[in-house]
Length: 243
Image 1: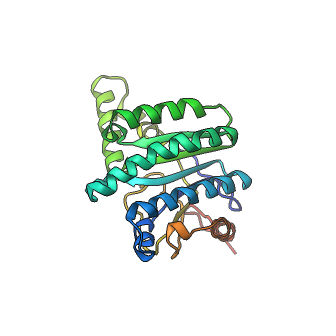
Image 2: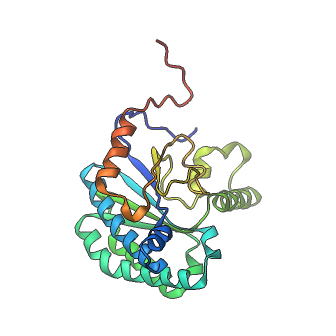
């Protein structure tokens, strides 16, 4: 049985954001690159608050892609420090807001200290009925995710834990690193019009909105404009709507 698709045309429940433009924002403002990333973290806090106000079920943010490891080491080191700082400063606030954190991607590559802090943040914010699930992609790539899921399925086949008849969309979703299944809406800031290896399986039927603003300039009003535009879309999921 295939994983279900939301029939609610009026309100997205699961949203993904490609937060692009931190570096360009910093350069435009004659600041160091990591100042752009710091500014971007503040925008995330605002969007989380708006998600709660709008009764969004989950927000999945593309914090660092598998390809971003090729960036200058000074920038990567700055992002590592920013992750530690953000966890320290924001977890208490997220707990007060009943927001549950879930990190996914190549977490071990961030080092033992960050991995431990991530694990503790997830434990501290875990709850059965959160007001929002905040999923953070760190060192994540959609293609790598599908390869990893395929390997795990092959291992289960080899061990006779499953048969080929058991393999369906639900199983791929189960073995994916991504905590959510179908994403309703993806927003990309920064002006580029591509997915950049983000949620390739989960975004199969997502509405995709491209915003020219750089992420540090993105506001709660911009986010609400995207939600309003989503409400006007006709989500057919391949079906023909007769006149």
